[in-house]
Length: 286
Image 1 (tube, rainbow, N blue to C red):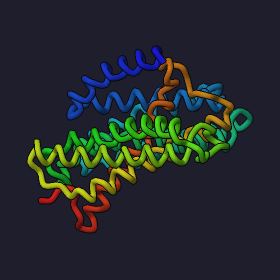
Image 2 (image 1 turned 60 degrees about the vertical axis):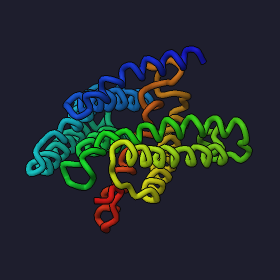
Image 3 (image 1 turned 90 degrees about the vertical axis):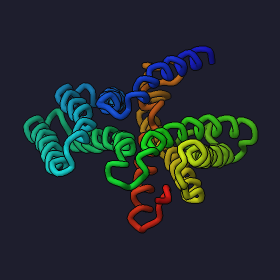
């Protein structure tokens, strides 16, 4: 427990400057590093890391993706398609010319996860810059980026405590034996409270008009899908016969063990905000 607390303290210290300068390229650099290490851990878990060319190509691609979001909107889509196209061509060239070493599942897993991790995490950058799209009030950009981060931390913490106190029914015993239905519900409830509290504080401190029911709904969806992300990564660990993806963070495991929920929670909140805006229902009442 002491090791876990010490590691958490170090993570908070490291996260502080990233959050302070999150409106700069610092956030993209952080996402890039997390993505690169995450892909390394995943390829190590699946033993695909023995295929050195695949590993190098995947890590470079994962590290590059977060910086593509810095491009002007008029050129971003074209560059994205070009980068993905080059990545796919390289993967299939490996399959064609080194078919004794590479199998289709190697290429498929590399492509899937090397896109999921950096692109989903880059949702944090999009949330931070969302006022530029006029979807939300410019005063809420930092809050919107911070919400999924705090939500998954609180959800994970209270899912654990609730499960320990009253957990009786296993949530997914074949995947994560210690997780319970009661724990998941408890985590989701506190995840909603994070969003509700943020809405009320923002209204009082920043002076924005918020749609409180919509914030609550966003909190519920973000918390639930975040927990799904945790289970999804647990499935991979089970298939690889691993307890943790690594030991980079003593007491917490690897990068993917710490960011598994956020990988899915961040894009969930982003899509919720854009979806509501599309149908004309706004989280921030203009």
